[in-house]
Image (cartoon, rainbow, N blue to C red; front, side, top):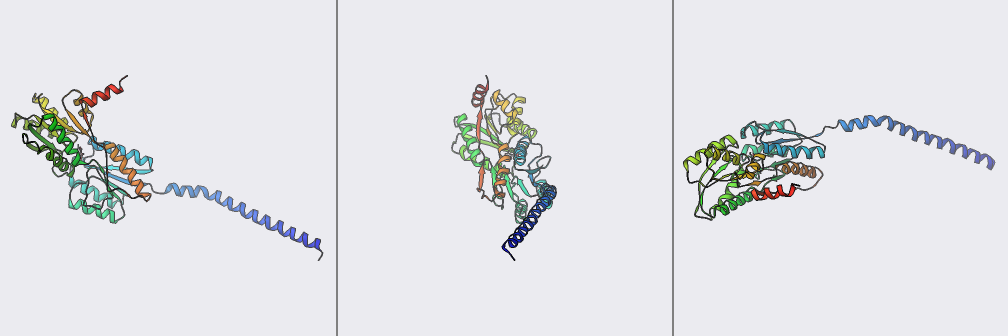
Length: 331
Ligand code: BGC
C-alpha cells in the first residue's frame, strides 16, 4: 500500500475514534443531566438531624430562653430541634421523656442533670447507642455526657454570698429559697453561698426553704418566713422565679425594709430592680446556653474534641448597673 493510502486510512480511523469518544462524552453528560434531579432529591430527602431538648419545666420563661437559643443555632446548622419537658417540675417525668427520646432514636440530646441514678443510666444508654448527650443548665457529671454547658453554679453561689455579706455589713439575719431540693445546681449555689456566709459569725442563716421553682410557692414560703422571723433583713432566691415571689410576699406583708437578692434576669425581676424592690440579681445566660450547646454539638459532629465543661458567663445586675445601662442607651 502506498504511503498516501496509509495516511488516508489513519485519518479515517482517527475521525471515527474521535467521534466515538465525543458521542460517549456527550451521552455521559446527558445521563448526568437526567440523573441530576434524582440525585439532588435524594440529598434533600436525607432525614434532617433531630435534636431533643429536655427541659425542667416546659413553659418556664428561663427554659423558653434556652429553647430560643438552641432553636436559632439549630436553624444555622440545619438541625431540627424538638423541645419538650414536664408541664410542672417533675423529675420522674423527665426520666420518662428521656426514655422516650432514646426509644424514638433522636440523633442527639440536650438534657438538664437531675442527680438521679436512673437518669444517669439512661444518659449512658443513649451514649452507648451512639446518641451524643450534652447536659445543659445543670450537669450530671457522673454520666458519660459529652460536655456540660451552663453556669458555674458553685461560683454563682459564692458571688451571691459576697453580695449579701457586703450589703449586710457582715451582720443580720438571712433566709434562702432554693428552686428544688434535689436539683444539683441549687445545691451547688447553696453550698457556694453558705461557704461565704459562714465566714461572718454575726450573719446568721435562719432558714432554707424550697419554692419548687414556683413563683406562687416562693411567695407563700416567703410570707411564712416573714411571720416566723420578724427580724429578717435579707432574703435570697436561688432560682429564676424565687426573687419575684419573695418581692410579692414583701409587698403583701408591707415589709419594705427587706433586702431581696434574686437569680436571673426575667423582665419582672429587672422591673423590680429598677423600682428598688429587689436589690440585685445574678444574671445567667440561658439563651447562650441553648445556642452554645448546639454549636458544640455541631463541632463534635465535625470531629472536634469538646471541653469537659463550657461555662457560660454570669454577671451581677443591681440598680446602679441598670441605671448605667438605661443612661447609656437613652438618647
Ligand atoms: C435555674 C434552672 C431552673 C430555673 C427555674 C434557674 O435559675 O438555673 O435550673 O429551672 O431557674 O425557674
